[in-house]
Image (cartoon, rainbow, N blue to C red):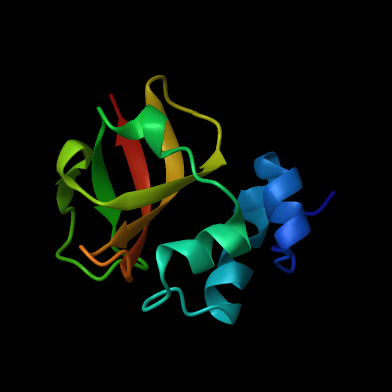
Amino acid sequence: MSNAHKNFSEAMWKNEPTKRYEIVSDLLEKYNLIGMDRDGVISLLGEPRDDIYSSYRCMVDTSIGQSEPREEFDLSKENFLFYSLVEAVIPDHKRSLFIRLDENDVIIGVYFVNLAT
């Protein structure tokens, strides 16, 4: 099977999480998540797994992020949604889509992140 990126579909994102990395680029091209509210993103992408990440720190991959290079977030102090893209390749690390929200639950940033405990 080819490693080419595929078209985003809500069904594939929600039902085949191990293939999210194949469709995330198309998702970000088709949908401007910045400015959407929490409910809109959850309707599109399904329920996130925020609960398991609250003790993590993350480093932002600025290839899509709107921040300074290598900005670090303390997730215990952030309003966020997380969607896993792939299983860990390096022990104790996960590649995820990090969606940052403001105090009104409006999306203010979308980033690829590597999480480390």
